[in-house]
Image: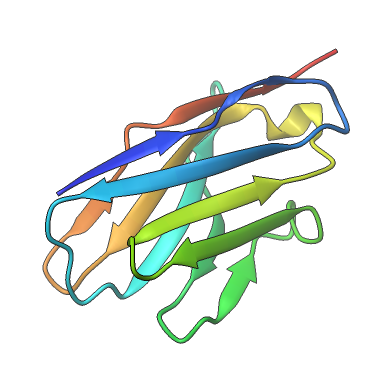
Amino acid sequence: VQLQASGGGLVQPGGSLRLSCATSGSLSGIKAMRWYRQAPGKEREWVAIILPNGSITYADSVKGRFSISRDRAKKTVSLQMNSLEPGDTAVYYCNIDTPYKTYWGQGTQVTVSS
């Protein structure tokens, strides 16, 4: 199983980006789908989670600005990021939990700068 994150780039403050995480291979029993991010010199931090029942939770730092969604049939997860701030600059990683293993995508760079 591989996760491929895409959609990152350079955007001005106040702008928007949409990240996507495509999966390849056989995934079963997905427990949770998450997005994390890691800024330079900082630890990786959790950003958002969506559970199989559709329950969604966001980190306080992105609440009201970011929106996580999924395509259950395609087993993909996306992150719509609005009102981006310089503090959102980081490498963003998708993460999928199953009962057997936790999978990580390779990361996509998001840079918010004028």
